[in-house]
Image 1 (cartoon, helix red, strand yellow):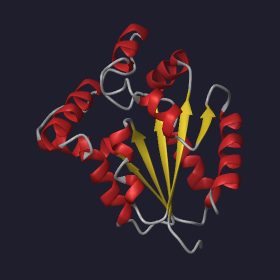
Image 2 (image 1 turned 45 degrees about the horizontal axis):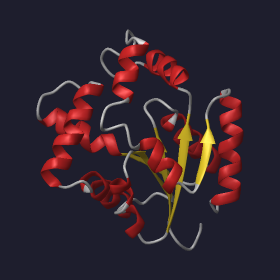
Image 3 (image 1 turned 90 degrees about the horizontal axis):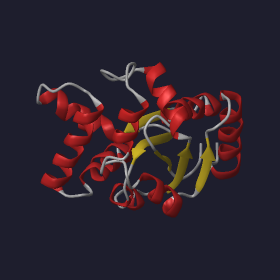
Image 4 (image 1 turned 60 degrees about the horizontal axis):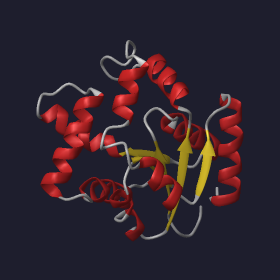
Amino acid sequence: MPSKKFYLGIIAQISAGKDVTAAMVRELIAPKMVQIINYSDRIGEELIARGLEKSQKNFQEESRRLRDAFGQEYLGRAVSYRALHSRADLPILTGIRRAEDITPLRQLPGDLYLLFLTAPAEKRWQWQRARAQRPGEAAKSFEQFMREDADECEMHIRQVGQQLADGCIDNCGTLDDLHHQVSLMLRDRLPF
């Protein structure tokens, strides 16, 4: 096991493959322990507590409400706290959307590697419909998807990824292509 703690942060637009990438990392570094900590987990907890449906719209509105109420770094602080107290060999932090999400992560003891995961909008829409994790996703039109993708909560992702990430994976090919790119990233950037 490495002598210092490492964290992997994934910056990605809606349905770009964050969960698939995190699962691949888990598989590739086994038997090392991975914990996936998603920014939307904290938002989802709040939606449940308030009795609201876990729709994309509600996640976006709740994200705004939490940031307005507790500061723009609120979700970053919540994820940073969970990562700091993780017993995993590699906490993977998914759902990073803003520079303010990263600021608290930079204060964690150890090394943080930020990965920007990209994919074309058409593919992301198709993957979201096929996955259908939230209500209404299976029937969502491309126009609806693009409206959600342009929401204020999502609009900073590309800029944050391009400016602050340590590396980029373009998820525009097959699962095997993604697996190969993730393998190379782990080999070249993380000590596992």
